Every structure is written in structure tokens, then in C-alpha cells.
Length: 187
Image (tube, rainbow, N blue to C red; front, side, top):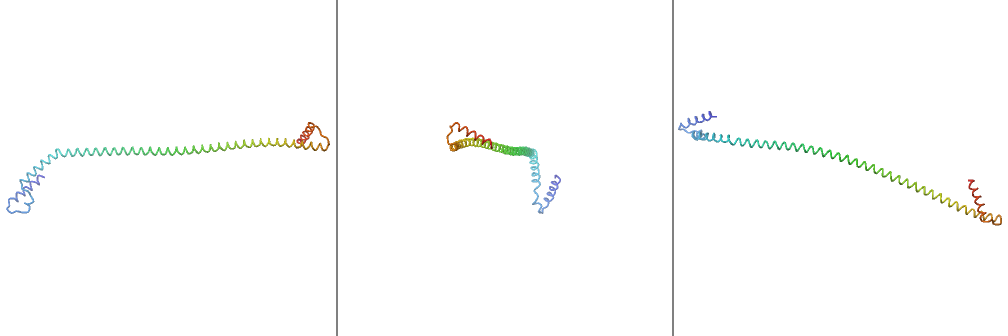
């Protein structure tokens, strides 16, 4: 870089000696200004290199560290979110299984209640049948007794007409009962 500057300066001196002014004189600064500019650039470059570059590097390193920590936090959040998603899916599967179990238990309980109701209804029907059979048997007995009494009364009336005289009541009843018993044994 210095060699380039020296060549430019040498060229500038050569051209400044000639009286003739060319277009290059307009482009190149005066050698004193050029040296002053180069010295100012070197001083500013030194100060920038000494204080500004470390400050910029420190800021860039801090920014890199912040970005790195944010990336790590994002990765941790991603891992946690994945864990929560897995837990949520497990809980959802458990809830579905529990719901199916509850439905199955309700179905079994419903079947059991239905079976209990049917058994109770059958038991009540059997009781009603038994009571009806008892009532029928009682009614048969009553009707049979009534028929016996009516047959006995008719038999006595017929016997009185046939015999012409009446038997005492006790004797007549005994005869009729014996006759009915004989008829009952024939069946």
C-alpha cells in the first residue's frame, strides 16, 4: 500500500513540475494534502482498531451469546412442548379407555337391572298364578260345597216325594252325604 502511495506521489511531483496542466492534476490532490490525509487516516484507523473494533466485537459476541441462548431456550421449549403433547395424547388415550370402560360397565349394569326386573316380574307372575290357582281351588271348594248342598236339598225333596214321608233332617243329611261321597269315589 505504501508503494502505491509513493508511486502516486512521485507521479504527482512529476506532473506538478510541468507547466502544462493535464486532467490528472485535477484528480490527484496536492502532495501536502495527500500526506496529511494519509496521516489522518492512519490515526483514525489506529483509534478505530484500538477502541471501536473491540467494542464492536464485544457487542457481536454478546449478540451471538444472546442468539445462542435464545436458540437453546427455543429448543428446550420445543422439547417441553413435545413432552406436553405426549402427555396430552397419553391422557386422551386414557380418557378414551376410561370412557369405554364406563360405557361397558353401564351396559353390564343395564343388563343386570334388566335381568333383575325380568326375574322380579317372573316371580310376581308366578305369585299371581299361585294366588289365582289358590283362589280357583278355593272357589272350586266353595262351588263344590254349594253344589253338594243344592244336590242334597234336591235329593231330599225327591226322596220325600218318592217316600211320601219326611225323614228327620239329620238322617237325611247323612244319607245324602254318604251318597255324594259314593258318587265322588266313582270319578
